[in-house]
Length: 115
Image 1 (cartoon, rainbow, N blue to C red):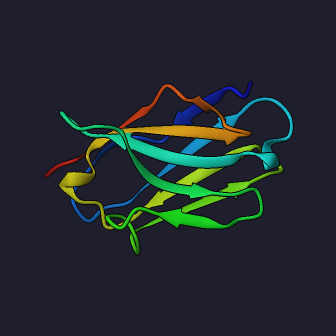
Image 2 (cartoon, rainbow, N blue to C red; image 1 turned 90 degrees about the vertical axis):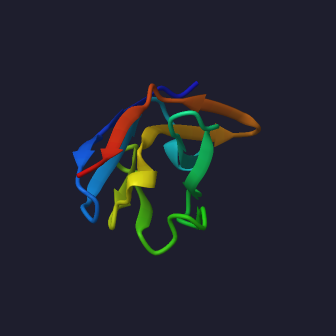
Image 3 (tube, helix red, strand yellow; image 1 turned 180 degrees about the vertical axis):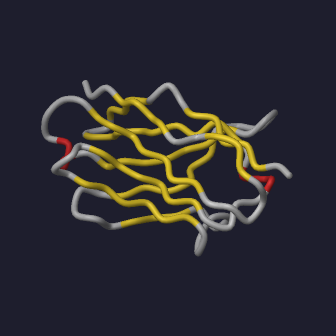
């Protein structure tokens, strides 16, 4: 089972940018579909973006054109570049690794967008 550690969260003003990173332990990282999810205050956890091992991406409509998911299979790391941040992006962001119907979650990193 892969272990995931997120980093890069913080406080940012509206319109600003942040980059989240998620480092994965274990082997066969490229076999996993990696994803970012978020859970805002009083809300359910929701999909932000996913990326397959060969780089096919999928985004929630709310972040299309602002967020970019990418991965470096040599470094066992997935990234989420967040531009044009809005207050409604405030949430705990979680990294997810999925393969053969099984998933692992990181501990989450807080992103707060506020002036």
